Image (cartoon, rainbow, N blue to C red; front, side, top):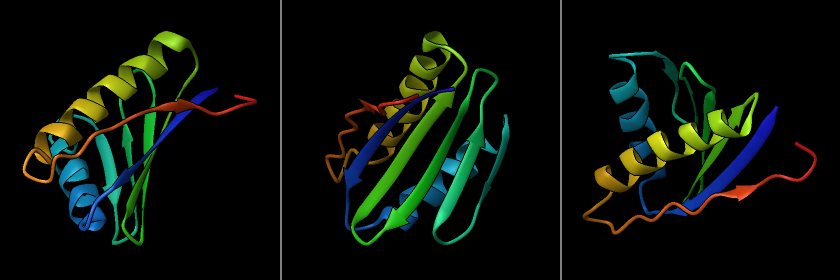
Length: 97
């Protein structure tokens, strides 16, 4: 599995985690609680965790094309939802994945 992650600083990480999971639940398997979330896209998954003032995103897929698609889909949605807060998502590949 290939993995990329992003740490997005925001005053409302739980709100965005919940908003992302609820949005994707209309089309794909999605689950969340107050601190963690998971979205299962057809090409890979995105795991989320709200920690303090950070929303940690972890995209995983079997191949580069899949992980890039997960990053693009989740990242663009989060940036659109967070326009007012000027959220930006910058992904970094995780070593050993």
